[in-house]
Image (cartoon, rainbow, N blue to C red):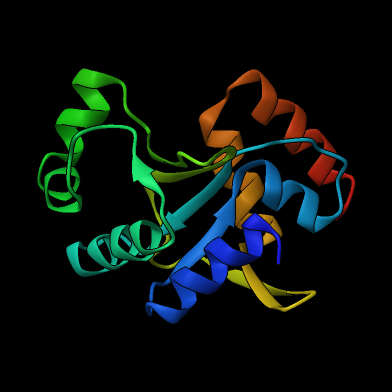
Amino acid sequence: MTGLERICTALADAGVRYAVVGGHAVALHGAVRGTVDIDVALAWNRKTLVAAENALTNLGLVSRLPVSAGEIYDFRQEFIENRNLLAWNFYDPNDLSLQVDIVINYDLKGKRTKRIQMGSGSITVLSLKDLIDMKRQSGRPQDVEDVAALEKLR
C-alpha cells in the first residue's frame, strides 16, 4: 500500500470528510505532475480536524508544529493572516518522504469530490472543476501551471 493509500484509508476509516488536493490530485486527474507531500482539504469543523489529527498520529505521523487540532481550529484566522500558515504539516519521522499537509485556508463544505480506484481501495479527490477553481484562487506559479494542465483535460 502506498503512502497516499495509507493516509486516505486512515482518514476514511476515521470518518473524516476529506479530499486530496494539490499535486497528487492534479496527477490523479491525469495531468503529469510530480510531488512528494500529500495535500488534503477537510470539511472545516473541529470534530473533523480532531479526527484527522488522530488518524495521522495513529499512523505514526507527527505535527511539525507544537499545536493541536483544537488550537488550529480556534486560531485559524490568526495562523493564516499573521503567521502565513496555509497548511498544517505532518510527517513520518521514520520516512521523511511521507508528508501530509492539511490545508487550513480551504473548506471542503459544498465542494464536489470524485472517488478514484487505487490498488487497495479508493481515494477521494477534489473534483476537476473545484480543483481548478482552488488553484486559480491561489495564484501561485505552480498552481497557474497546474490550471493550464488541468484545463486541457476538460
